Length: 307
Image (tube, rainbow, N blue to C red; front, side, top):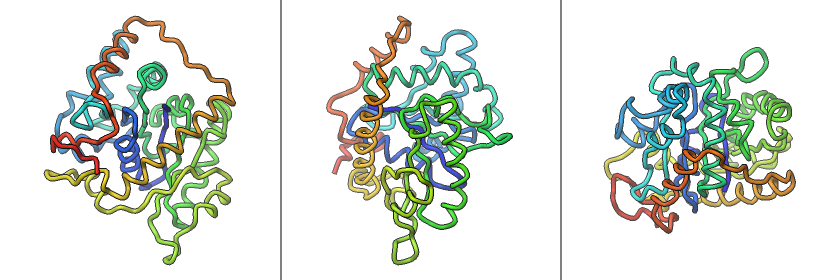
């Protein structure tokens, strides 16, 4: 299992990539919409299944009342019909972002516990990297979640423009992870193949050399999946028949291998859970899901979406 944070520059496809990884994981998964902007999954992929009464902002209020763990559990929503893939919806108003400044740290510990003790792959959509004074913005980017993540995936398209725009972001994240995280080597690139090689698209090895950062994988440009994850559908296709989901499952496996190797190298044992309230939340979430988690069931279909 792992905690992975995805971030990018302008228009890199972070949210679509997060959905692909969360929905294709062979393990139970939790997707956290942590970007400072207005979140899109509730109105897009989930087509307004719930409103502003659910989501991340409410956790900031609960934290002030020492009820973060209970609110965390109460605001999780299903991404599939079996409840094996969960979503913590993000903000409905970008002006709410500053209220979360003091919540990221305790939330990061909950996400670690979901990984290490409840058996979830945790995927965090951090959105566009927001810079302030030469560093990460203290309230408009969930820097603490990146600091505590097993791996930070910087999403970049295989075009010259995207590479040029994203390179300074990579340097900033490397410095941030080295100073405040688990090391600059926690950073990896996740490449989106917007252009085929014949049309001038860059190869992953060329991108890795330019950034001096390893590429974990390259996801295909899948118009059908992109439209589904952006706008939703009343008659969604079987997810695991989509090219993006097929490749994303391999991506999640590759990330898992890297995380396992890095944890062993850094000697990072699982942190104990000292709070009975948190332990109860983890136990309930672990026992409520169905097994096996691998087949993806779309909550709007009520049928198996595994190809």
